[in-house]
Length: 404
Image (cartoon, rainbow, N blue to C red; front, side, top):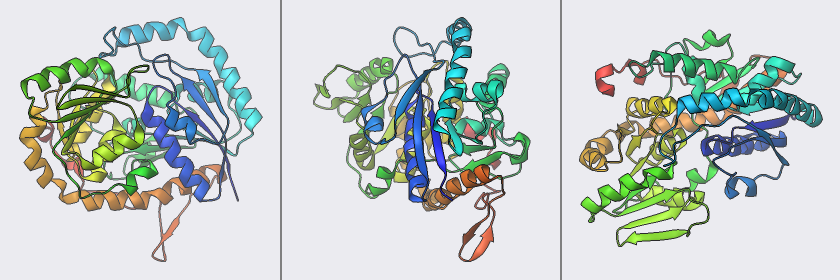
């Protein structure tokens, strides 16, 4: 049976949008259809052209809570974010009716939520009929085996509470992870939690995996970090850097000097350069790290200040053996560890294999949620559970000293 799927996508991060594009492709290939896409509108970012260009379905928008950043676009301000959320409570409350009406108008067989909080609140308040599937790496916070960074207990509680609030009444929570995980703990979310590999865009798999050129690639989700990159570059002008940032209205390519070039965000160009670089230096976004892992590129991650989720991503990057973490854009750290990180790529083929095997699992879990049945899939003629492939002796076993 062909399923009619409605996507609701958080507009705050590009990663949620690329996940939606990747899952859209898998569902259509399996014979299902997307009835429409509802985007949570971000005050800080517009929907990128590469997203709108690849969606044939109608796109509509809803107001959604966003992070508040400092004037330099470098630090997330949690207190100011909370204050604005409280200020907008009445409007957001009304917005749940709007989302309910859109769900009824599209009449889907299943709603798929890419970590948009308005979906959870709508299902809590109005309980729409279609089954709900939630997708995002943040749902790993609900796994009993997930190990948060040391300390910050209040932030841990808030991260878990927010993840749960996006998934009220969900039939499935598909928790994306950089590494396989022992399925023990999946029942902690009422048997709805499934640990899944990253959802990566199709263009990644067409990139060469055996090319290296003498430059580092830098990705700045917040352009306020450019000053740190320039400062490091001026002390190391012999190191060639290509830096991607989001500065609407500026030149597509801006040459700072002979060895530092800034580029406007361009998905295809970024992937092409990632496939050729020596290593990636980035804020601690989930998708960029996963893409670099697939291409075998060492990573240095710098979590956005005040952004606890990125702090967790940085620890997960180290836990997965993908790279190193730091609090500033000091590229010397990646340069110093490059040889050891390249040597640690021995599990690269395992990661790629797990990634590809998991693609059918996404469709199977969504079909299961829509049909209300536990799905089993066939592999080499044998019936296996959707959680097959989890590694019970994987990175979970690493000690805190290895994460320091």
